[in-house]
Length: 235
Length: 132
Ligand SMILES: Nc1ncnc2c1ncn2[C@@H]1O[C@H](COP(=O)(O)OP(=O)(O)O)[C@@H](O)[C@H]1O
Ligand SMILES: [Mg+2]
Ligand SMILES: [Zn+2]
Image 1 (cartoon, rainbow over the protein chains, first blue to last red):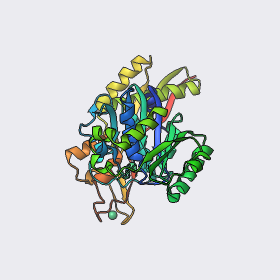
Image 2: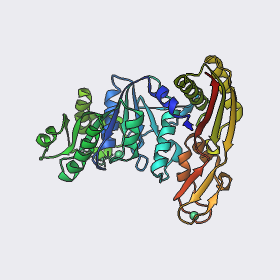
Image 3: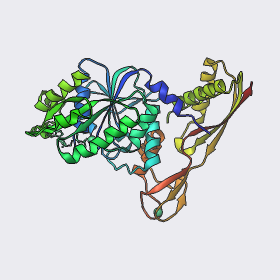
Image 4: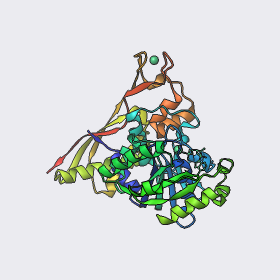
């Protein structure tokens, strides 16, 4: 038996120039903030899509204050949020929990990739869940050209876990764009990170960022927004 | 999932597989479609016909709908899709993303959300027949 949905995925993704997955071994390190803000920074010059693959903790719709729903036409056309084509599981689960098990996660990803009509994009940014679960495997299988940005904080607890993800990605011949150090205060582990790969940049701890969540312009004007924009220009 | 997207998947897969096994023409395709995909058969068949024209194909397509079966991992109860009480919106969500059922429904007997879709999910090509 052949899964008839798989052949469509290639078709749906073929007009996307670059796929960038923002991941980390850890949760709470700023993946969602970085991916949404990076998508907004890139959208000033490029055609950008943002796919939220964190089914347990979708967050990018809150950061960008996404309202409109996808439109139906031979599949689903993602709504434009801040000029970014946006897709998330929240369009199907609303605010309810999505208690998906391993194979449900794979099926949900296949289905999302098969129904979403991104059309032409320069960048598709993917906000990933923490760790090396099915979502990472799905990228390995369905998006072989994807490039990873890995986010860590300067804490040893974050970095030790992130190193394992980096090793896994290297073992599996994934393209790693580089490593972002987020929530940097006085202490940075830049030297340590550089031993493992390309250091894409530091994002300072910005205590004001919480009150800007949901306001795209305010995020872009903040110190956080400026730090992310610098990183976006490097990729 | 959407009928047109699905039809596209079926025809593209069949064409690929026929090429791989050096078939000159595809005469018949057997499809198994999970009830959970909630396909409108009229639209689906129309889409298949239109796409076959595009690919210069004329195959007979046999469609079998597989009933859904759910099983609760906590109390072992088994049931069908009809037993869920879903709103129209929730049905629409499940049509597009069958896994959203885990957000909108529970085991009818014990109320657990820890259940399995045993059958009735996905779109499968069971066989492709043609001339070599
Ligand atoms: N540079 C930063 N300065 C201050 N707070 C930050 C920074 N980056 C992220 N945060 C905050 O940390 C929390 C976790 O961020 P989030 O993007 O949800 O992480 P993840 O997606 O990795 O779980 C959020 O409350 C966010 O506002
Ligand atoms: Mg997140
Ligand atoms: Zn039960």
